Image 1 (cartoon, rainbow, N blue to C red):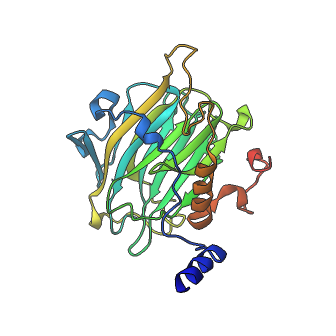
Image 2: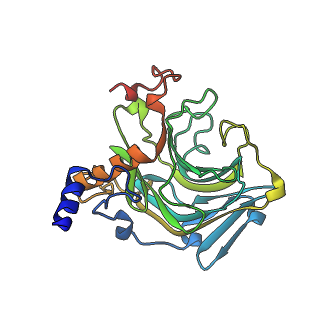
Image 3: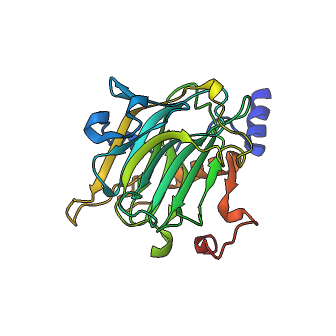
Length: 293
């Protein structure tokens, strides 16, 4: 009888804040082969602040320099991911990033899709920021499309897998194969369509990274270290034939998410999203028309 009552209570009053997201039911990272760093990437800047050991890349920031890397090929769609571990302790002002961009090909008028760890102070969690810039909205007068999350785990304790799935129809951000955000194409004006490269970096963004610049990088805690491994970059390169078919983050070859994946994403956004640009009353949403449609 007691067991029956317990089960009845669970059914009538399910947990409203589980510690872990529901299973997405599909694991896109398992569909793509990892590559060695040197096969898919090259140093972009700060070579003295970058090392590779057994396909694991370490980059670091100190008061002399940070470091960055870049894919050897541009892509027009694909699945791009890496397992990343960030530094614990005081990391305010420091950005650890994994992103797509064509800023070198289109300076002042570029596209960009970001996964960024915003450094933090003692006792506070990292913020994972996702962002999309389109045709210069990240240049000059910035028009960001940020969604920010406090993750359901500590990203300093172990490697976790972070991914961007980009097709002509949608951008999906995933953490450990759990979709956390889907950014659909609603118009060509609000969606990146030009080829982009894959980048990663660690750098000082003290002017804005931590609580809008309230806390700055403090180099008495240097070096600030980020580690990357299990690199994956698969899809249609910019040089692929026209028949190259975009990859998918779900069982559906045409794209989109399954019902189970959408359920997992809603859980993350309900319990772990801390900022959504579309819900910010201080933003001018004339500049972000996708929020209204």
